[in-house]
Image 1: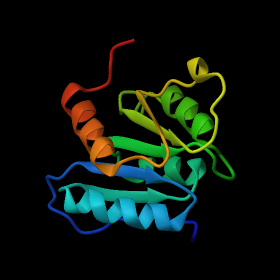
Image 2: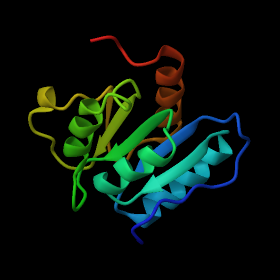
Image 3: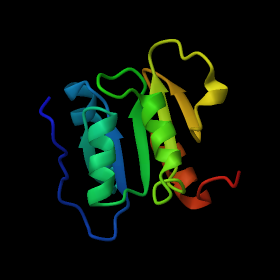
Image 4: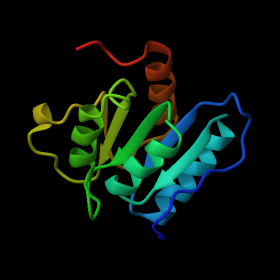
Length: 135
């Protein structure tokens, strides 16, 4: 996967979902399914690129893989919460592997991979309606 973000054409009022994963097949499949469900999508191959993408256009929500090179999902989530502008944006973390010390990762929702896309989209919609839980 190249080191850049991609954003597909969608209605301007559609919510922007930032998908972060180092596996191109997952990004392309999730992008298609989220767009089909009425969202705009931006993608990033790792946490560092996700932070750069978020600086360009603030997403409504982020869905991130856990195991990635350069900056993993846990590091991204912590950096996300440390950034005053990104802090209120809901964060969903997904992992096929074992995630130790869940309590130290300030995500809003966690899914074990493979994630049923209907459940993931339902959770994205729920978090967007609810907004981020108040600490």
